Image (cartoon, rainbow, N blue to C red; front, side):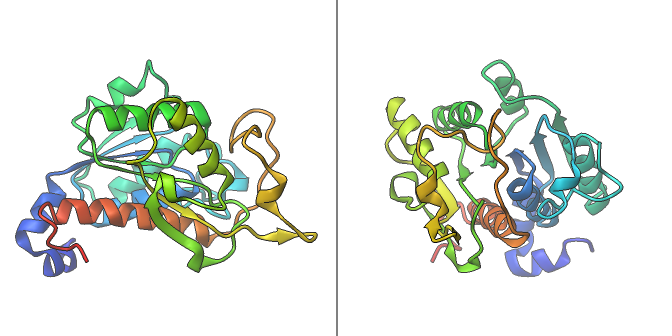
Length: 250
């Protein structure tokens, strides 16, 4: 049986909850591709994916869907094919679209019950967080992984408690402008690799562009930190599904 080991851990009822759940992953790059992988391999029955980008050769160092055979393909097409290869019975809805106020409603109207926010660009990320909160959809928002090399630095906390992460700092500021001060569960890395005697986070400020925005400088990443963040985000949501009454909570 494909998910027999999951059922041994979660029981027949838990495996059924996973199979009957609908989880969305917004952004399927370095962080999102690992979150997506864990969600699929746990046996979630319906998965919604959204990303407007294509697979590039520079993605190979950190994205599960980035292979020599997928370079040039849309990320959602490559991801959808991988999901079906993992579980031929999974139901996949893929949106090869930029996340905006015009497109997000249609994405969420696919019966989304849980979500992973793994997008980088500022405006869509803020809009996604606002919308998920307004719709009371449980979600995890992933923050910065660039310039981080310490695998033990990945933390889970509320957005209001994040530290030493320029990405999270900008998101905090923008959310405050929208009247949101807390209530956003985050996964991020508090480590920032020092180069030339300076902490990278000190070289950036809140007015500098976030990843994947026009005009940004390429940011260094290592293979495992985005993966740890993505797997942690998926784990939090999967635990939510498996423990609606806190059975699995510590």
